[in-house]
Amino acid sequence: MFGAVRTRTLLGPADPARNVAVEPPLVSARELIDRADATETVAGRRRVRPTRRLVLTAGTLAVAAGAVAVLQPFGAATPDTPGSATGTVLVPVAYQFDADPPAAGPQLRMLADKIKDAAYDHQRGRYMYHHTKVWGDPVMTSADGRHLVAFVGETKVWQAADGTGSQVNTQLEPQYPDQESRTYWQRRLDSQPAAGSTPAPNRYPLPPMDLSPPTAVPSELRELLKVEYGPAAASKEVSTLYGRYVLPRATRAAVLRVLADVPGFRWRGQVTDRAGRHGVAVTFDDSEHDAQSLLVFDPRTGELLAHERLTLSPVRISSYQVILDAAWTDRVG
Image (cartoon, rainbow, N blue to C red; front, side):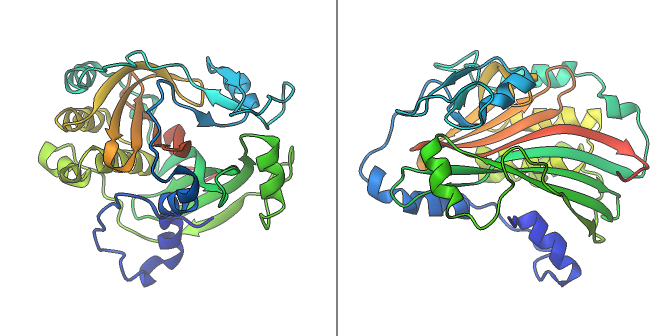
């Protein structure tokens, strides 16, 4: 699967838009395709936003990560036996503030004022290291709207300030909501990791590019986060920022304060991310596109733990990223 970041990396200096600031799309290409595929089944109907977020995943993940969650059947499907990766939908812990959540501004400012050092604030090294995992990149829906598959990938990146370094991508087994979807898509997908197998990672070098440290100056940070385009764009840029840089404490605090001034974010309180880590969350409900953006922060350090873009009609995950680790290092693994 080729995303924008990987495509630009492969093009390197030959990329004609390398130094062009591209405005974030209101709707991703995959989301447009999914919506087109589902038009016949959802046209003229808009589902009411659920009070809990339904997330497509394997039941074994919840057990391994220790997340406090329940496994329920997807639609009319019956959950498989324990340990199976099919037939289950993970329902994460409900938001602390589910109905009528308060504005996020005051809480984000309080968080910015009290955050502490992260482990990497006391590290030194040539390379910025990031370990991330993404579900739903992309989510594909069959033309009849009955069969779903969510692609899953894991990435490790070692990148110096001049952009050079190494990246390792691992395609993991796709996730399905039921056995019927698994059977349908396994007949149509050209290649995918076999169930229970260890997929071979793909490693490639990173070309030079300017990775100047992000600023902590509020006005410049607002421009970097594209807050003029609204909370959905800001959420995406925050995720990109934390996934690319190892942000010092002052910059993390500045990010929280900038987000506090963006109208539309709501405070959801305590949540648990897909890695089983406890955090605090803010959301933005994008009613125009029937979607919700979620940011989960570490309540102690202000680090971004997870970013989710959830399409609400029909209910499915569009993208969910967790930042499992960030550090400074002199070694490329």
